Image (cartoon, rainbow, N blue to C red; front, side, top):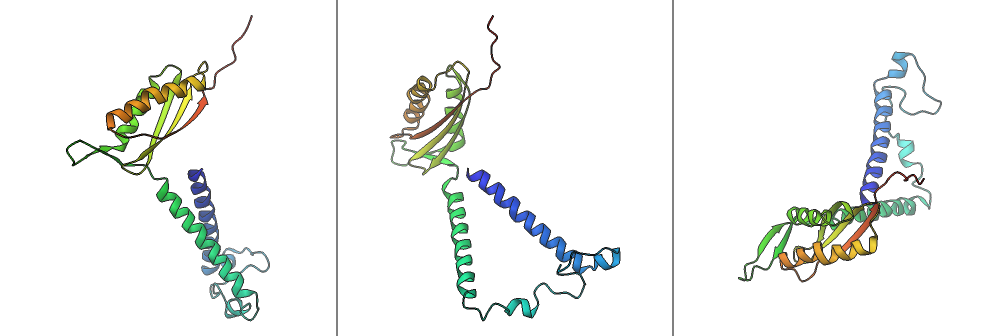
Length: 198
C-alpha cells in the first residue's frame, strides 16, 4: 500500500511541477508572442516582463479575517501528512541484519537478506507452494517476517500455513536462536486454465 501511495504522490507532484515550470518558461521566454499563438484569457505569464506573483496578488487576502487561519490550517495539514509519510518510510524499512545470541556474550550478526532467502527457499520447497517472497522488518533483536506465498492450484491454504509455520519459520527460529519469529502470511492462488471435463 505504501509503495502505491509513494508512486501516486510522486507522479502527481511531478506533473504539477512540470506544468507550472512549462507555463513559467513559456511566458518568461515570450513564446506566445514570438511563435504567434495566444494563451487563454486570464492566463498569467504571457510576456517576458511578467512576474510570478504581483504585489496585488500577494497582498489582496491579508486583510480578510479568514486568510491566516486557512493558511495555517493548510500548512498544518501538509506538515502532518509529510510527517506521516516520513514515519511510514522509516517504520516499513527492511531489516538489514538480525542480532543472534552466540552464547559467548558477544553476539553475532546475520544478514537479513540471507535469512529472507533461506526462509523463501524452504517455503518454496513445500508441496503446493509455487513461489515465496519474504521480507524481514522490526528490530534487530526481535525481527518480524512478512511472507507472500503463491499457491499451486491444488493447494489448500490451511495446511500450507501450518506447514510453513512448523517447518520454514520454526527452522529459522531454531537456527538463528530467536525466541520467536512473528509472521504475517499472505497467500494467493496461481492462475490456471479451466480443465475440460468430458
